[in-house]
Image 1 (tube, each protein chain N blue to C red):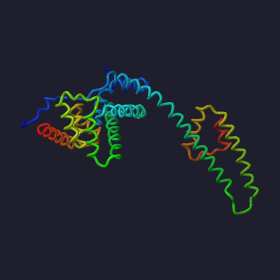
Image 2: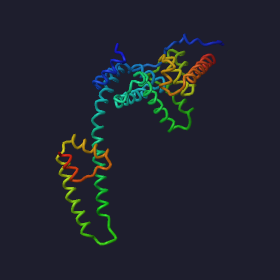
Image 3: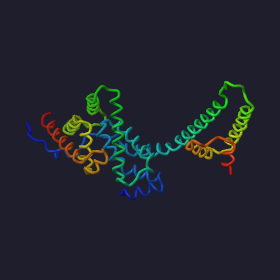
Length: 178
Length: 127
């Protein structure tokens, strides 16, 4: 398994080769991070490609002040926000964006509806405010530390902890009541 | 009614699926797009550079040919003659450059706002 230092060294010596290694290592985890935020597979595919192209453009500007994975997650998260913000421009409210994401969850070729509990869990997540949903995803699915999430989202660790706590409480309530 | 929900019942499972072979295809497409990314950027910079050089030339023309309220002096005639000569020299110089040299030259002249399109500068560049 390639480690981050090796990828970083290769990126400096040979950007094309380094980028290939980077895509191989992070493609899957970044795709799932994006997919959980934008829900539709087709949208996730577009956002993923934009994310990697942006990474490629700015690869030589990456400074080792944060870890490579944190930097990549940050770019991916920004791309998710850019995508969701674009939706907000064409809709009236945040609720409409949530409703649109919910529709995509409930009518997709690439969602397995056989497992009702898994679908319901994603529905519960879609009732959360965007930021809470992001924090929950990064902590629960990606198992990132609060410090890393703080670097990705520019949010204080204490705020993140309370976001995560409230997100879990809301999900529990939804799962019990629905 | 259930009183609590245990997250371990679901763990990290999600109902999301991807088409078969998605990651292999995606990786190939991403690398292809990244390879293409370099070429248009260069062309774009070149176009920008040419636009900037043309804009600078237009400004010089505008300045020199601006109708004067007074009669044309010998000095002004000399200026326009100089422009004709210097524009020819610039054209000649630009025509003799390879794409890469042209790009470098435009980059340089774009970044230095005090850089003037004069035959003197061109001669210095050639040396």
